[in-house]
Length: 431
Image 1 (tube, helix red, strand yellow):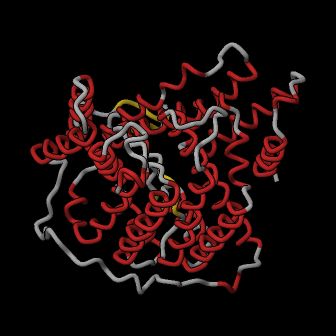
Image 2 (tube, one colour):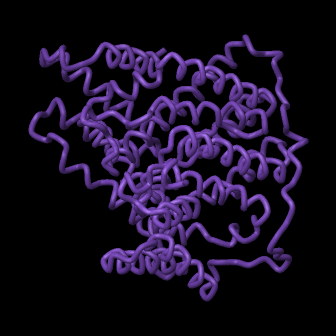
Image 3 (cartoon, helix red, strand yellow):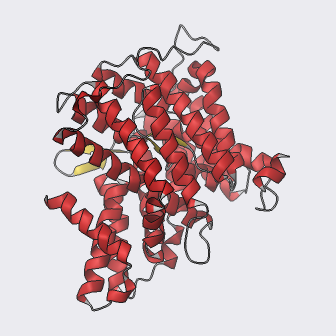
Protein backbone atom coordinates (compact mmCIF):
# COMPACT_ATOMS: atom_id res chain seq x y z
CA UNK A 1 0.00 0.00 0.00
CA UNK A 2 2.72 2.47 1.01
CA UNK A 3 4.83 1.37 -1.95
CA UNK A 4 1.94 2.05 -4.33
CA UNK A 5 0.90 5.36 -2.77
CA UNK A 6 4.40 6.85 -2.62
CA UNK A 7 5.69 5.00 -5.74
CA UNK A 8 8.71 3.84 -3.77
CA UNK A 9 9.73 1.01 -6.10
CA UNK A 10 9.03 3.19 -9.13
CA UNK A 11 11.55 5.69 -7.75
CA UNK A 12 14.08 2.87 -7.31
CA UNK A 13 13.98 3.01 -3.54
CA UNK A 14 12.85 0.72 -0.71
CA UNK A 15 10.64 1.20 2.33
CA UNK A 16 13.64 0.55 4.62
CA UNK A 17 15.73 3.17 2.82
CA UNK A 18 12.93 5.75 3.04
CA UNK A 19 12.41 5.16 6.76
CA UNK A 20 16.14 5.38 7.53
CA UNK A 21 16.31 8.56 5.43
CA UNK A 22 13.42 10.04 7.40
CA UNK A 23 14.98 9.21 10.76
CA UNK A 24 18.28 10.72 9.56
CA UNK A 25 16.59 13.96 8.49
CA UNK A 26 14.79 14.14 11.83
CA UNK A 27 18.02 13.57 13.78
CA UNK A 28 19.71 16.46 11.97
CA UNK A 29 16.86 18.88 12.68
CA UNK A 30 15.63 17.69 16.09
CA UNK A 31 17.63 20.54 17.64
CA UNK A 32 14.78 22.88 16.71
CA UNK A 33 12.69 21.33 19.51
CA UNK A 34 15.17 22.74 22.02
CA UNK A 35 16.34 25.87 20.23
CA UNK A 36 13.00 27.33 19.09
CA UNK A 37 11.42 27.39 22.58
CA UNK A 38 14.65 28.86 23.96
CA UNK A 39 14.64 31.71 21.43
CA UNK A 40 10.91 32.53 21.50
CA UNK A 41 10.72 32.37 25.29
CA UNK A 42 12.82 35.56 25.57
CA UNK A 43 9.73 37.40 24.31
CA UNK A 44 7.69 36.21 27.28
CA UNK A 45 6.10 33.25 25.51
CA UNK A 46 5.62 30.10 27.57
CA UNK A 47 8.67 27.93 26.79
CA UNK A 48 6.94 24.59 27.34
CA UNK A 49 3.98 25.62 25.21
CA UNK A 50 6.33 26.69 22.40
CA UNK A 51 7.91 23.22 22.50
CA UNK A 52 4.54 21.62 21.81
CA UNK A 53 3.67 24.18 19.13
CA UNK A 54 7.03 23.59 17.45
CA UNK A 55 6.53 19.83 17.28
CA UNK A 56 2.87 20.03 16.21
CA UNK A 57 3.54 22.55 13.43
CA UNK A 58 6.37 20.34 12.15
CA UNK A 59 4.07 17.30 12.16
CA UNK A 60 1.25 19.06 10.29
CA UNK A 61 3.42 20.78 7.66
CA UNK A 62 5.56 17.71 7.02
CA UNK A 63 2.44 15.53 6.72
CA UNK A 64 1.13 17.84 4.01
CA UNK A 65 4.49 17.57 2.25
CA UNK A 66 4.39 13.76 2.57
CA UNK A 67 0.80 13.05 1.60
CA UNK A 68 0.11 15.83 -0.92
CA UNK A 69 3.50 16.61 -2.46
CA UNK A 70 5.06 13.18 -1.91
CA UNK A 71 8.57 14.65 -1.79
CA UNK A 72 11.26 13.84 0.84
CA UNK A 73 11.31 17.30 2.45
CA UNK A 74 10.69 18.12 6.11
CA UNK A 75 9.37 21.33 7.61
CA UNK A 76 9.51 23.03 11.00
CA UNK A 77 9.79 26.56 12.44
CA UNK A 78 12.80 28.10 10.73
CA UNK A 79 16.03 29.29 12.28
CA UNK A 80 16.78 32.93 11.52
CA UNK A 81 13.10 33.66 11.19
CA UNK A 82 12.55 32.81 14.86
CA UNK A 83 15.49 35.06 15.80
CA UNK A 84 13.99 37.93 13.75
CA UNK A 85 10.67 37.29 15.51
CA UNK A 86 12.19 37.45 18.99
CA UNK A 87 15.16 39.79 18.84
CA UNK A 88 14.11 42.28 16.16
CA UNK A 89 10.31 42.53 16.25
CA UNK A 90 9.76 42.00 19.99
CA UNK A 91 12.96 43.01 21.81
CA UNK A 92 14.23 45.45 19.17
CA UNK A 93 11.07 47.18 17.95
CA UNK A 94 9.28 46.82 21.25
CA UNK A 95 6.18 45.02 20.01
CA UNK A 96 4.42 42.20 21.82
CA UNK A 97 4.88 38.59 20.80
CA UNK A 98 1.18 38.64 19.92
CA UNK A 99 1.94 41.33 17.30
CA UNK A 100 4.74 39.20 15.86
CA UNK A 101 2.49 36.12 15.74
CA UNK A 102 -0.11 38.17 13.88
CA UNK A 103 2.53 39.05 11.24
CA UNK A 104 3.36 35.35 10.84
CA UNK A 105 -0.35 34.52 10.54
CA UNK A 106 -0.81 37.13 7.80
CA UNK A 107 2.32 35.83 6.07
CA UNK A 108 0.78 32.37 5.94
CA UNK A 109 -2.42 33.71 4.38
CA UNK A 110 -0.49 35.72 1.77
CA UNK A 111 1.65 32.69 0.90
CA UNK A 112 -1.43 30.52 0.44
CA UNK A 113 -2.84 33.12 -1.98
CA UNK A 114 0.46 33.51 -3.85
CA UNK A 115 0.78 29.75 -4.15
CA UNK A 116 -2.80 29.38 -5.40
CA UNK A 117 -2.09 31.90 -8.16
CA UNK A 118 1.25 30.23 -9.05
CA UNK A 119 3.31 33.32 -8.15
CA UNK A 120 5.80 31.39 -6.02
CA UNK A 121 5.99 28.61 -8.62
CA UNK A 122 6.82 31.21 -11.29
CA UNK A 123 9.71 32.47 -9.13
CA UNK A 124 11.13 28.96 -8.64
CA UNK A 125 10.88 28.12 -12.34
CA UNK A 126 12.39 31.47 -13.41
CA UNK A 127 15.75 30.68 -11.79
CA UNK A 128 18.23 29.65 -14.54
CA UNK A 129 19.50 26.06 -14.41
CA UNK A 130 23.07 27.24 -13.82
CA UNK A 131 21.96 29.13 -10.70
CA UNK A 132 19.92 26.15 -9.52
CA UNK A 133 23.08 24.07 -9.48
CA UNK A 134 24.89 26.92 -7.72
CA UNK A 135 22.18 27.02 -5.05
CA UNK A 136 22.88 23.35 -4.28
CA UNK A 137 26.61 24.03 -3.96
CA UNK A 138 26.01 27.11 -1.80
CA UNK A 139 23.71 25.18 0.50
CA UNK A 140 26.39 22.50 0.77
CA UNK A 141 28.96 25.00 2.00
CA UNK A 142 26.36 26.60 4.28
CA UNK A 143 25.42 23.26 5.86
CA UNK A 144 29.06 22.28 6.31
CA UNK A 145 29.79 25.65 7.92
CA UNK A 146 26.91 25.16 10.38
CA UNK A 147 28.28 21.70 11.19
CA UNK A 148 31.82 22.97 11.70
CA UNK A 149 30.61 25.69 14.07
CA UNK A 150 28.49 23.20 16.02
CA UNK A 151 31.54 21.03 16.67
CA UNK A 152 33.64 23.99 17.79
CA UNK A 153 36.17 23.34 15.02
CA UNK A 154 35.38 26.79 13.63
CA UNK A 155 34.85 29.58 16.17
CA UNK A 156 34.16 33.32 16.20
CA UNK A 157 37.19 35.59 16.09
CA UNK A 158 36.96 39.37 16.33
CA UNK A 159 40.09 39.97 14.25
CA UNK A 160 39.49 37.47 11.43
CA UNK A 161 35.72 36.82 11.86
CA UNK A 162 36.34 33.07 12.21
CA UNK A 163 39.30 30.92 13.20
CA UNK A 164 40.25 27.37 14.19
CA UNK A 165 38.87 26.21 17.52
CA UNK A 166 40.81 24.28 20.16
CA UNK A 167 41.63 20.75 19.09
CA UNK A 168 41.56 19.82 22.80
CA UNK A 169 37.85 20.63 22.95
CA UNK A 170 35.84 17.39 23.49
CA UNK A 171 33.16 18.75 21.16
CA UNK A 172 35.68 18.84 18.32
CA UNK A 173 36.69 15.27 19.09
CA UNK A 174 33.07 14.07 18.98
CA UNK A 175 32.28 15.95 15.75
CA UNK A 176 35.38 14.84 13.85
CA UNK A 177 35.08 11.25 15.06
CA UNK A 178 31.53 11.26 13.73
CA UNK A 179 32.77 12.47 10.35
CA UNK A 180 35.41 9.70 10.22
CA UNK A 181 32.94 6.98 11.26
CA UNK A 182 30.35 8.19 8.75
CA UNK A 183 32.95 8.49 6.00
CA UNK A 184 34.19 4.98 6.67
CA UNK A 185 30.65 3.57 6.55
CA UNK A 186 29.86 5.47 3.37
CA UNK A 187 33.00 4.15 1.69
CA UNK A 188 31.85 0.63 2.63
CA UNK A 189 28.39 1.49 1.23
CA UNK A 190 26.68 0.76 4.56
CA UNK A 191 22.99 1.75 4.57
CA UNK A 192 22.13 4.27 7.27
CA UNK A 193 25.69 5.55 7.52
CA UNK A 194 24.66 9.08 8.51
CA UNK A 195 22.27 7.84 11.20
CA UNK A 196 24.84 5.39 12.59
CA UNK A 197 27.40 8.20 12.68
CA UNK A 198 25.02 10.39 14.70
CA UNK A 199 24.29 7.63 17.20
CA UNK A 200 27.98 6.66 17.53
CA UNK A 201 28.91 10.29 18.19
CA UNK A 202 26.18 10.53 20.83
CA UNK A 203 27.57 7.48 22.64
CA UNK A 204 31.13 8.81 22.43
CA UNK A 205 29.85 12.09 23.85
CA UNK A 206 28.81 10.25 27.03
CA UNK A 207 32.45 9.39 27.76
CA UNK A 208 33.89 12.87 27.14
CA UNK A 209 31.19 14.98 28.76
CA UNK A 210 29.47 16.24 25.61
CA UNK A 211 26.32 14.12 25.83
CA UNK A 212 24.39 14.82 29.01
CA UNK A 213 21.62 12.77 30.62
CA UNK A 214 19.70 14.86 33.19
CA UNK A 215 19.28 13.44 36.70
CA UNK A 216 15.52 13.91 36.40
CA UNK A 217 15.46 12.01 33.12
CA UNK A 218 12.10 10.49 32.19
CA UNK A 219 11.66 8.26 29.17
CA UNK A 220 8.07 9.30 28.50
CA UNK A 221 6.31 12.55 29.37
CA UNK A 222 3.04 14.17 28.34
CA UNK A 223 3.37 17.20 26.03
CA UNK A 224 2.79 20.61 27.67
CA UNK A 225 -0.41 22.50 26.88
CA UNK A 226 -0.32 25.16 24.13
CA UNK A 227 -3.16 27.13 25.75
CA UNK A 228 -0.92 30.08 26.81
CA UNK A 229 0.03 30.82 23.18
CA UNK A 230 -2.79 29.28 21.13
CA UNK A 231 -4.55 31.76 18.78
CA UNK A 232 -3.08 34.77 20.58
CA UNK A 233 -3.20 37.50 17.92
CA UNK A 234 -3.13 41.28 18.09
CA UNK A 235 -4.89 42.83 15.10
CA UNK A 236 -4.90 46.37 16.51
CA UNK A 237 -1.86 47.47 14.44
CA UNK A 238 -2.39 45.46 11.27
CA UNK A 239 -2.33 48.57 9.07
CA UNK A 240 0.74 50.19 10.64
CA UNK A 241 3.98 50.84 8.74
CA UNK A 242 5.90 48.65 11.16
CA UNK A 243 3.56 45.73 10.46
CA UNK A 244 4.20 46.21 6.73
CA UNK A 245 7.98 46.16 7.25
CA UNK A 246 7.85 43.12 9.54
CA UNK A 247 5.50 41.27 7.20
CA UNK A 248 7.67 42.01 4.15
CA UNK A 249 10.78 40.71 5.94
CA UNK A 250 9.05 37.49 6.96
CA UNK A 251 7.74 37.03 3.41
CA UNK A 252 11.09 37.73 1.75
CA UNK A 253 13.30 35.54 3.92
CA UNK A 254 10.87 32.62 4.05
CA UNK A 255 10.17 32.68 0.32
CA UNK A 256 13.77 32.53 -0.80
CA UNK A 257 14.93 30.19 1.98
CA UNK A 258 12.25 27.73 0.88
CA UNK A 259 12.94 28.26 -2.83
CA UNK A 260 16.65 27.74 -2.23
CA UNK A 261 16.13 24.55 -0.26
CA UNK A 262 13.69 23.02 -2.77
CA UNK A 263 15.89 23.89 -5.75
CA UNK A 264 19.21 22.98 -4.13
CA UNK A 265 18.21 19.62 -2.69
CA UNK A 266 16.29 18.70 -5.87
CA UNK A 267 19.33 19.55 -7.99
CA UNK A 268 21.59 17.38 -5.85
CA UNK A 269 19.20 14.42 -5.81
CA UNK A 270 18.52 14.51 -9.55
CA UNK A 271 14.82 15.31 -9.05
CA UNK A 272 14.82 18.30 -11.41
CA UNK A 273 12.94 17.55 -14.66
CA UNK A 274 14.31 18.00 -18.18
CA UNK A 275 13.61 21.74 -17.99
CA UNK A 276 15.38 22.07 -14.66
CA UNK A 277 12.15 22.52 -12.67
CA UNK A 278 11.33 21.08 -9.25
CA UNK A 279 8.60 18.41 -9.51
CA UNK A 280 5.25 19.27 -7.88
CA UNK A 281 6.74 22.53 -6.65
CA UNK A 282 3.31 24.15 -6.23
CA UNK A 283 2.24 21.46 -3.79
CA UNK A 284 5.58 21.77 -1.95
CA UNK A 285 5.09 25.52 -1.55
CA UNK A 286 1.52 24.88 -0.43
CA UNK A 287 2.82 22.67 2.40
CA UNK A 288 5.14 25.51 3.45
CA UNK A 289 2.24 28.00 3.40
CA UNK A 290 -0.09 25.76 5.40
CA UNK A 291 2.71 25.14 7.92
CA UNK A 292 3.21 28.86 8.52
CA UNK A 293 -0.54 29.52 8.76
CA UNK A 294 -1.18 26.66 11.21
CA UNK A 295 2.06 27.33 13.10
CA UNK A 296 0.98 30.90 13.87
CA UNK A 297 -2.35 29.65 15.21
CA UNK A 298 -0.56 27.10 17.41
CA UNK A 299 1.84 29.78 18.62
CA UNK A 300 5.17 29.56 16.84
CA UNK A 301 7.22 31.50 14.31
CA UNK A 302 7.36 30.92 10.53
CA UNK A 303 7.46 27.30 9.37
CA UNK A 304 9.75 26.60 6.43
CA UNK A 305 11.26 23.75 4.43
CA UNK A 306 14.43 22.55 6.17
CA UNK A 307 17.77 22.46 4.43
CA UNK A 308 18.58 19.47 6.66
CA UNK A 309 16.25 17.50 4.37
CA UNK A 310 19.40 17.08 2.32
CA UNK A 311 20.62 14.58 4.94
CA UNK A 312 17.70 12.26 4.25
CA UNK A 313 18.06 12.67 0.49
CA UNK A 314 21.77 11.82 0.82
CA UNK A 315 20.71 8.69 2.71
CA UNK A 316 18.60 7.64 -0.28
CA UNK A 317 15.21 9.21 0.47
CA UNK A 318 13.29 9.96 -2.73
CA UNK A 319 9.59 9.96 -1.85
CA UNK A 320 7.02 11.27 0.56
CA UNK A 321 7.62 8.22 2.73
CA UNK A 322 10.77 9.94 3.99
CA UNK A 323 8.71 13.00 4.97
CA UNK A 324 6.04 10.79 6.55
CA UNK A 325 8.72 9.19 8.72
CA UNK A 326 9.95 12.63 9.81
CA UNK A 327 6.39 13.64 10.72
CA UNK A 328 6.03 10.44 12.72
CA UNK A 329 9.26 11.13 14.58
CA UNK A 330 8.13 14.65 15.48
CA UNK A 331 4.83 13.19 16.72
CA UNK A 332 6.79 10.72 18.88
CA UNK A 333 8.96 13.55 20.17
CA UNK A 334 5.90 15.07 21.85
CA UNK A 335 6.02 12.14 24.27
CA UNK A 336 9.70 11.17 24.08
CA UNK A 337 11.25 14.62 24.15
CA UNK A 338 13.81 13.75 26.87
CA UNK A 339 15.25 10.99 24.65
CA UNK A 340 15.71 13.19 21.60
CA UNK A 341 17.07 16.06 23.67
CA UNK A 342 20.01 13.86 24.74
CA UNK A 343 21.50 13.94 21.21
CA UNK A 344 24.04 16.79 21.23
CA UNK A 345 24.54 19.26 18.40
CA UNK A 346 28.09 17.89 17.98
CA UNK A 347 26.66 14.49 17.00
CA UNK A 348 24.38 15.81 14.28
CA UNK A 349 27.13 18.19 13.11
CA UNK A 350 29.09 15.28 11.66
CA UNK A 351 26.14 14.44 9.40
CA UNK A 352 25.81 18.07 8.30
CA UNK A 353 29.50 18.23 7.32
CA UNK A 354 29.23 15.06 5.23
CA UNK A 355 25.98 16.25 3.64
CA UNK A 356 27.72 19.52 2.81
CA UNK A 357 30.25 17.53 0.79
CA UNK A 358 27.47 15.65 -0.99
CA UNK A 359 25.62 18.87 -1.84
CA UNK A 360 28.52 20.48 -3.71
CA UNK A 361 28.72 17.80 -6.43
CA UNK A 362 26.53 19.79 -8.93
CA UNK A 363 29.40 22.26 -9.23
CA UNK A 364 30.66 20.18 -12.17
CA UNK A 365 27.46 21.10 -14.05
CA UNK A 366 28.00 24.85 -13.72
CA UNK A 367 29.19 26.74 -16.80
CA UNK A 368 32.37 28.45 -15.61
CA UNK A 369 33.58 29.56 -19.05
CA UNK A 370 30.84 32.17 -19.62
CA UNK A 371 31.41 34.88 -17.02
CA UNK A 372 27.80 36.09 -17.25
CA UNK A 373 26.94 32.64 -15.88
CA UNK A 374 30.01 31.97 -13.71
CA UNK A 375 29.98 35.20 -11.66
CA UNK A 376 26.30 34.94 -10.62
CA UNK A 377 26.88 31.27 -9.74
CA UNK A 378 29.92 32.22 -7.66
CA UNK A 379 27.99 34.94 -5.81
CA UNK A 380 25.19 32.48 -5.08
CA UNK A 381 27.65 29.94 -3.69
CA UNK A 382 29.90 32.21 -1.64
CA UNK A 383 27.27 34.50 -0.14
CA UNK A 384 25.23 31.73 1.49
CA UNK A 385 27.83 30.68 4.10
CA UNK A 386 29.32 34.16 4.47
CA UNK A 387 25.98 35.89 5.16
CA UNK A 388 24.57 32.82 6.95
CA UNK A 389 21.55 33.03 4.68
CA UNK A 390 20.28 31.00 1.72
CA UNK A 391 18.05 33.92 0.77
CA UNK A 392 20.92 36.43 0.51
CA UNK A 393 22.89 34.04 -1.69
CA UNK A 394 19.97 33.85 -4.11
CA UNK A 395 19.58 37.64 -4.05
CA UNK A 396 23.19 38.32 -5.05
CA UNK A 397 23.19 35.52 -7.61
CA UNK A 398 20.00 36.62 -9.35
CA UNK A 399 20.84 40.34 -9.25
CA UNK A 400 24.30 39.84 -10.74
CA UNK A 401 22.82 37.50 -13.37
CA UNK A 402 20.30 40.09 -14.56
CA UNK A 403 22.80 42.97 -14.52
CA UNK A 404 25.54 41.09 -16.40
CA UNK A 405 23.11 39.74 -19.01
CA UNK A 406 21.77 43.25 -19.60
CA UNK A 407 25.22 44.85 -19.88
CA UNK A 408 26.36 42.22 -22.37
CA UNK A 409 23.24 42.56 -24.51
CA UNK A 410 21.87 39.13 -23.67
CA UNK A 411 18.44 40.45 -22.74
CA UNK A 412 16.56 37.45 -24.12
CA UNK A 413 18.29 35.09 -21.68
CA UNK A 414 16.53 36.82 -18.77
CA UNK A 415 12.88 36.00 -18.18
CA UNK A 416 10.35 38.78 -17.39
CA UNK A 417 9.92 37.31 -13.90
CA UNK A 418 13.67 37.64 -13.29
CA UNK A 419 13.54 41.35 -14.20
CA UNK A 420 10.67 41.92 -11.76
CA UNK A 421 12.46 40.02 -8.98
CA UNK A 422 15.68 42.00 -9.58
CA UNK A 423 13.78 45.29 -9.23
CA UNK A 424 12.22 44.09 -5.98
CA UNK A 425 15.67 43.10 -4.67
CA UNK A 426 17.03 46.58 -5.43
CA UNK A 427 14.05 48.17 -3.69
CA UNK A 428 14.72 45.96 -0.66
CA UNK A 429 18.33 47.20 -0.46
CA UNK A 430 17.90 50.90 -1.14
CA UNK A 431 14.35 51.99 -0.30
